[in-house]
Image 1 (tube, rainbow, N blue to C red):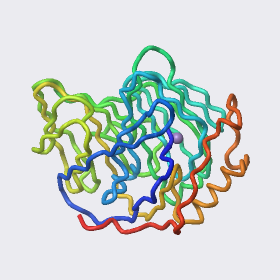
Image 2 (image 1 turned 120 degrees about the horizontal axis):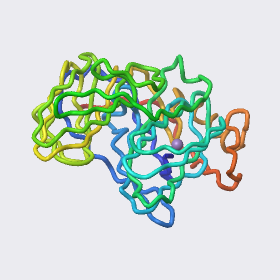
Image 3 (image 1 turned 180 degrees about the vertical axis):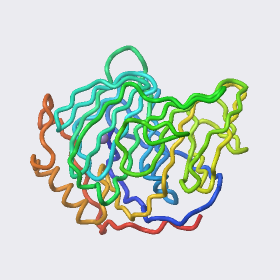
Image 4 (image 1 turned 90 degrees about the vertical axis):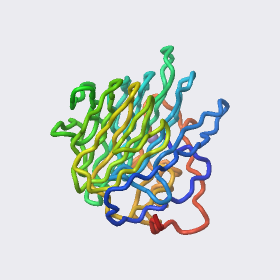
Length: 320
Ligand code: MN
């Protein structure tokens, strides 16, 4: 998906200090995406005081919507997009020639590198449209990499009695996703059975967060309702998850991302100039960077919003 916010604010993305083990809630905010149907998403990342969790820099929870979600061609740089549907099927097309359908429990991951464009259309298959759109920030040494797309239909499972985790990116408990990751990271879709208590291993020097999609969960002694992100900080070697009636949640984590980034619209860069150049290349239809997508007309391209009147710059994370 795209950040379709008509007037996206500059994000606050300075590298942060090591917080240690914490349990802080960050409410997702309702972001209208415009359009005739008034579709909106709940955006849990970035937060003003929490721009990233590991390299995860963007987390939208969309749906369930009765109607399919359609996002026309738009560009990305400096990041990976991760499309993770819970319900419904999504057709992905991009400027490196991909044209595929992703289904629940399958992963679409697109590495934008120096530049890519894509579209995502929900298929009219009768199911509701419900899922997550995530981005990872590419570390400096990889952010100009050649754009490419991967789909993974069979993802590995980390299992404990009463708990099942589909590892879609990175590593959990020695189980590693086949998807290409550019920093030490974890993304897992976890089911906790009714009445179960299970303790998953974490990498102590990574930071982690959980978000409940459905059900009731207690994580590290904190009751977690569906909706907000529970940021767990660093310094945890394990995490105990319990549920009375069962839970479906997402675990995100990774090595704290220590590079200052500038994030604006659908771009992750390091400077105002990075963003301005990418915006100009999209607006001028510079096909060397953002080739056209087969099957889409030029008129379907989503125009970039105007840059704000101030220079974009990474800013401090602010007091906790
Ligand atoms: Mn997108």
